[in-house]
Image (cartoon, rainbow, N blue to C red; front, side):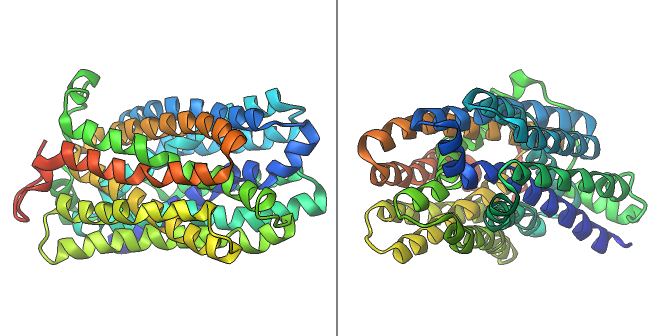
Length: 418
C-alpha cells in the first residue's frame, strides 16, 4: 500500500478500536435498569459504580499517555485493548454492587489509552490541514460504538441474559489486536512511505526530546488544554452513562424502545466528530491560523450548549431526543477539535502525555460530576441535572480562550511554537 492508503487504513483500525471501546463502556448504562433490579442498586450505588470506572480512568489516562510517548502507539494500543477486553468479559461474573464496581475499575485502567495513542498516530501520520478530519474519523468510533451498543446489548440481554451482553463485546477486542500488530508501524519504520514523505511528516510534526513533567506543568498552553477538559468532559459522561436510564425511568421507554431509539443521539455525535473536524480543517485551508480555526468551532459549541437544559423540561419525548441529538453533536465536535488542538500545540514527543493529562482532567471532572448527579437526581430530579450540564461547555470555552489567547492570536503564516 502507498502512504496515501495506509494512513487511512490505520485510521480505520483506530476507528474500530474506539467503537469497541465504547461498546464495552456503554454496556453498563444500557443494562442499568436490569442491574438495578437484580442487585438492588440505589442512585448512590450506581453513581459509585460509575465513579469507580472514572477513578481508574482518570489516573490511567495520564499514565497510558506517558507510556505511549515512551514505547510507541503500536505497543501501547495493543496493551490497552487486551486489558479492557478481558475486564469487560470479567464483568459477567459480578455478584453485587461491590464486584460490579471492581470490574468497572479494571475496565477504566485499560480504556483511556486508545485516545492518546490515536491522537499521537494522527499527529505523526497527517499534515495539519488534514489532521482534525483524521482525528474526527477515528474519534467517531466513540459514537458508532455507542450507537451499536444500545441495540446490540439490549438484544443480547433479552435473548441470552445480561452476562452474555458483557462477554461477547469483550471478545471483539481480542480479534482487533492481531490486525493492529500486522498493519501498524510508525512513519519512520513503515515500508509504505518514501523518504520524501517521511521528511514532509517530520517537518509537520517535529520530534523533540521527551519533556520532563516539571517542564510540561509550567507551560501555560498545557493548562489551557487541560482545564477546559475538566469542565467539558462531564457533559459527555452524563449523556453516556445516564441517558438510557433517563429515557427508561423518566420518559418510560421500554428496553426494546431504547434499543430502537436510543442510538439516534449517538449517530449525531458521530456526525459531530466528522463535521467538527472538517469545519476547522476547511478554515485552515482558507487561510485561518490553525489554533484560531480550532477555537472557532469550540466557541460555537460554547454558545449552543446551553440549549441542553431543555431536555429535562420539554414535554415531548421526541423533542427531548432532538435536543439531545444537538448536544451530543456539539460534545463530539468539541472533543475532536480540542484533541486536535493538543496535537497542533504540543511537541510530537509529548503529544500522548498532554492528551493523557487532558483525559485525566476530564475523568476527574466526570467523577466529581457523577457524585453530584447522584445527589441532584435523587433530590431534585433529572431536569436539574440537565441544567447543570448545560453551563459546562460555556465555562470550558471561556477558560480555553483566557489561557490560550497568545496562540489564538497568531497569524496564519506563523509557525505554532511552544
